Image 1 (cartoon, rainbow, N blue to C red):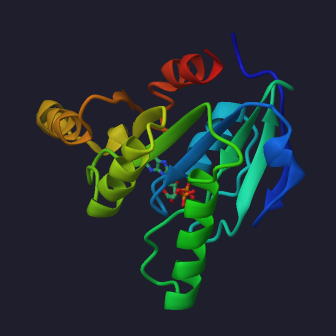
Image 2 (image 1 turned 135 degrees about the vertical axis):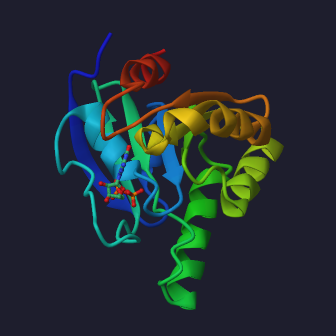
Length: 189
Ligand code: GDP
């Protein structure tokens, strides 16, 4: 199986009928600059579908893409962007929580992207534990594995596995494409 079609539908910032229309939702979330847009672009093989930005923190709003006419890929804003104003950060935090913990709809899967070189940050782990508490179906992608030196690979991936716990982790590089097949298989199953 493969991703054969991907279409940007709309950006939402609150209640919208699309979220209750019955199509499954797969949400992508991660710290700003973790490579979420690059990952989504690599998955759908359309450069610029999710805007890759050199200046982090730009994705404002919940971006919804229709994949294979069968499910929505929901691109949430990046969190933890230090340079945003307090007000903007609070707004994004509220928007993310509104979407993830809304009683009116749910997600088939939540894909949490972390940086393999840095490992899960306290923000990543806090979110992971909130998602666990709500029994969400979570897949962790550790992106940027191209940044790991051979000598540190096993130690770092082991540390990540220990911190992430029982969830499935896919080690990936959106730069080299390593691991992309596994991600697609997980998304389409
Ligand atoms: P987002 O803010 O999470 O959407 O992150 P972007 O996709 O905009 O990427 C942020 C930066 O990380 C950009 O400079 C990307 O080129 C870079 N980047 C993304 N994925 C990788 C990766 O797998 N390896 C490396 N080395 N850099 C990456």
